[in-house]
Length: 185
Ligand SMILES: [Fe+2]
Image (cartoon, rainbow, N blue to C red):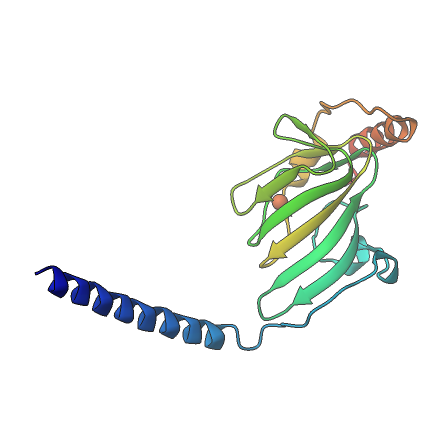
C-alpha cells in the first residue's frame, strides 16, 4: 500500500511539472512583443520635460517628467516626476495603476507626511489630494493609461493642510493659493 501511495504521489508531481512547463511556454507567447531590452541609464542623460507640453499625466500645470523607460505593448512607463513647491494635486483616478517611491522632498497625502523612501500605490479608486509644500521628486511606474481624471472644482476649493518648512516652500504655497483664488489650475 505504501509503495502505491509513493507511485501516485510521483505521478501527480510529474503532471504538476508538465503543467508548470506548459504555463511557462504560454507565458513566453504572452510576453511576445514586450520590450525585454536591458537598460542601465545615467540620470544626467535623460532631460526633464514639462508635462504641460508632453501631456502624459493631464494634471494641473507645473509638473515635470523624466521618462526613463516605456513599453507600448505592456503600456508601462517608468519615470520620475517633479512637483514644484506648493503644488497641489487634486483627488483623481486613472485607468493605470501606479507604484510611487518618494526620492526627494515631501509628499503629503492621506494624513501622512511622506519622505524619501516612502511609498504609495494607487489605481482606479479615487485618491488624493496630494500637497507638496516643499516640492517633491518621485520615481513612479504606471501600468496602463497614465492620464489623470480630476475635477477643477476640487482643486479650486482645496484648503491647504500641510505647512511648508523651507523658504522656497513658503513662497510656493503662497503662490499656489493665490493662483487657485484666481481660478487658475
Ligand atoms: Fe494617482
